[in-house]
Length: 470
Image 1 (tube, one colour):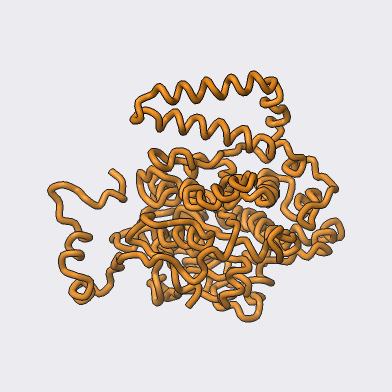
Image 2: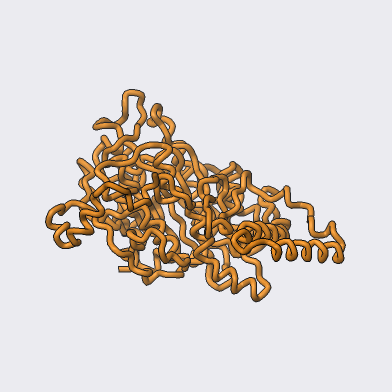
């Protein structure tokens, strides 16, 4: 049964108890509980961004080593950075200083393009130290399966992926553009099918899932195969078939026909040479060349997918999701994590540099119009030591597993005056929250809100985070 199923026959759970007591009485009886409340409609930042890049640090990330690092050695054996940018209040880790991709003469081209180590622009990032899947729960969810389900959908067994909610939320924007003859691409999941689930009213809004980093398979135009008269006959047959169906049966056919039409429209865009990022074209678009994007972001799979994400935005794509790395280091974390963070740092720095260089069709830069967020399915623990017995870390039910310390960056963060800010805090010796705790579903809802997506009825007990704009 999904966590989203609040009504369970024959039970009287904590949520119903608190509803029966009333918020005030419940707060007195249970002063340390997180109380769900009716979500406010939107934040002052509603619609402030046009694009979202959501990056999952795969496998469960030890957030205290990078984004909540002002803690004791048992939580961060790598230390905190003493070179963080001026005005940085959140706990930037020493691992954020790693930047082998800027070292030496061969990497001068990246320095010339403006890339910097992450620690030099931490004052452009805002971090939420205490994000929890279920603040109402007595323990963390450190399971790979259930933690990932929560990350992708908001719930265990959740039926609708986050990117499906994005596409559903911007449907009116897409409709208005279509009336003007403009095709806007949907959100894309670059390699993660769980972000693309959805049934019922959400079925037609499931995002494409793209494996690889290009659209080479779309080189042929299927619409050009049929002459105009044959295409007209095929369309008339579809209309007659649908008209003969009982109204209760038309939904599935309409979904199929809409999907087929959308595929045809999208195919025209997919054949655009701009999306062939692996060819590293020297042709400039939005103020930057594909070759420069690859120089900034790298030729590995993650770098190429990130470059493709930025090109998808050119065609109106509202959001892209991608995985980075593999952080499930039950052993050899002391040796492996620094190298993995080096790659993550390059991705973050490359995206920042590219977005700030790219000019947006609506004016300003893509940095002004884009939000970049990093997360993972849970944090990691060692049970009181710097590492476990295999020099790695694990995941269980404690606070080290529970807190997902998520960084946000983009022009909207700077405009809100939240660059370098920490929205919350922890006790450095035991990780107990000493500031706000946010539900992960509130984070998802906040991203929808900033995108200007309709989120009415989505996660009804979890409000978008107003503190970004307080």
